[in-house]
Length: 166
Image (cartoon, rainbow, N blue to C red; front, side, top):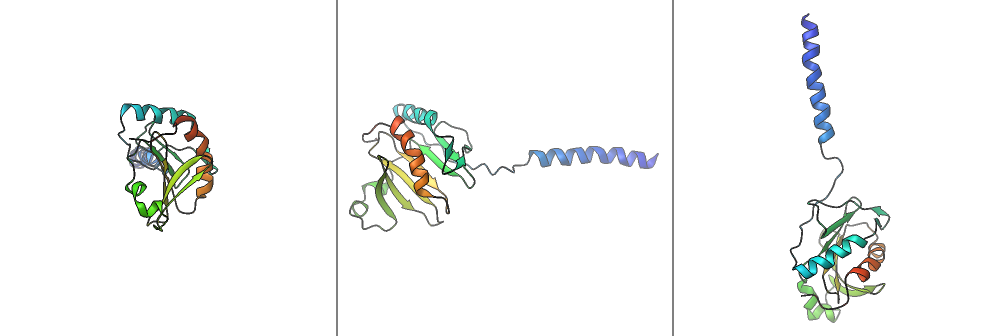
């Protein structure tokens, strides 16, 4: 009788440990700070979210936490897109415009202009320029940056009109 009691007591503990293991986060979903743009920019960003591709650089979409139409993600480690960010200071830095800043380079891909900033951790941050909203894309080390920008270009062109963001 005593061994039956130990088996019955052990069963809930086993079920609990399986349940806890099943609830633990094994999917590596990243997180991203959600921007706080004005209403007009939010509308543009919501339109962008609707036309973003399901795959970027061969990676499937996996949106970061907290869920928002202003953020999107693909792969693991994640490629993170944030729409409605503030203008990066380097975007108005004359050294960048003249090509004298080795960590920030301006350039275009498929009709979308980007400011590229190398980060200390091997990742790159791209912020679109000459559009009515700033869209920032962080690409982790080891990911094909060109493929990311090529895959996102048509969505940015479709949803974010040319112009100068506030």
